[in-house]
Every structure is written in structure tokens, then in C-alpha cells.
Length: 161
Image (tube, rainbow, N blue to C red; front, side, top):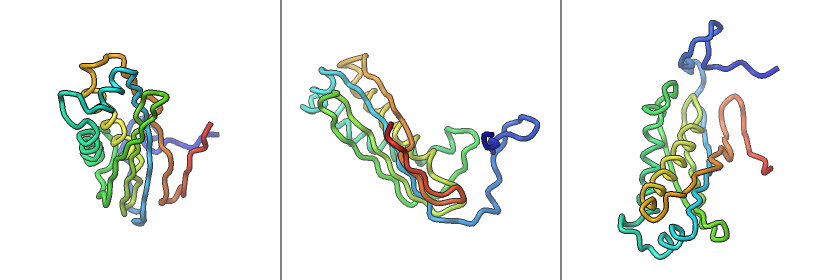
């Protein structure tokens, strides 16, 4: 039987989970996603010939800012103190794609999974926005949690399927 959803009351109403009795622990999370650009947008990004400027530097800042704003975007998400957020990129030339990687660290009573997923998504959307003049066929996909540590549920590491 699946575990009960902590954001749903027994009556079926949405609620913010009370984490006040949970002891603060070191929490980490990593997430990843992919921006499939296609040939023309990938080449323009490689050549840094896009008119909007440095796409990856802008996307990095956008991802970090997105992580910091997660509780304002996700209705039942807690506002948490972030000790560190990083956003990095890997070039996937055969796929004509950019892989977005985000990591976050916090010491608190709830995890940072939503923050890294938001960071990846906002960074990917920024890449899309800055490259859309070259191609409208850009696709964002495979946004997922890679790993997390801390808390009562323990560690999670995604298995590659």
C-alpha cells in the first residue's frame, strides 16, 4: 500500500505539512534536466552568436534565483534557508542538447528537492527563452531528482533505467 500523502488531510484537503517537531539536519539534493536545442540553436550557443548575450551565465543565475523563490512558486512548499545552490551545464553534442545540473544544501527540518527541481526548470526555461529566436522546436525534458540526503526518509539515489 502506498504511503499517505503528507500534503493531504484525512478529509482530502490540501495543507502545508507541519515540520516544527522535526530536528534540523543537513539536507542535500541534486537534480538534472535536458534542453534539446536542435542543430541551429546548439551551434549558435556553441558559437556564442546569440544576440541576447551569455546564455549559460544568465541561465545559471536564473536557476539560482529560481531555487531561492521556490516557496513563492509552489503553494505548499516551505521557505527554507539555503546554504548553497549551484547550477552547472554539460554539453551533449551528439544530442544537440545542454544538460542542466543543480545542487543545493540546507540545514533545516525539510528537504531541498523542490529547490533543485525548480533551479533546473528555471535554468532550462531561460535557455529556451534566450535561444527561441533561432528555433521554436527546442524541447525541455527529463527533469528529475538525481539524489537527496538527510531527513527521516534517508538517502535517495536515482537508478538509471
